[in-house]
Image (cartoon, rainbow over all chains, first blue to last red; front, side):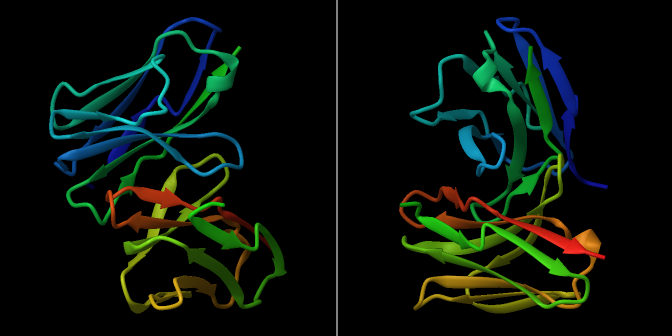
Length: 111
Length: 109
């Protein structure tokens, strides 16, 4: 089945230790999004790719980076995770501006 | 004030009850989504609306563009419907999705 896959589902990292979260899709969608969702809050858009064009939200910290080596894969790199970065990270894809298909999310814990 | 507001924030009901979750928005939109998120889980898209009404199984979503209001209804609610329901609007001016804070629904057996 076509889908959005996120790995790992649960990630524990140490304070300050770089971590990479992965998203892949079999939908061949040209747009991929990364959202951060903290407990009991709405998802917050970090950045998105339109094909290879990277679009960063103005308030996304520099600590967060992203790579999209090809249509199928997109990575979220957190260079120096802080305790405040513990959250659910959601990847989504879209082929038009109307619909978004979400992955299952990666829950990040920072110790 | 959030551009997308949901009510109630929390809702507990007995199995079988008819459930209504409301969403109002204050910006121009081109579409509105209803999303479901189970505890610890990812987000599933339930509906995308730009006008009128949609039905899928026991779920019904309506939107009134003039009143800038949408509702999600669940008929014959079941404990497995327990989840957070999120309203998200596609904002006209920049095509960004603006999320409501969600409604936490708990259906008791």
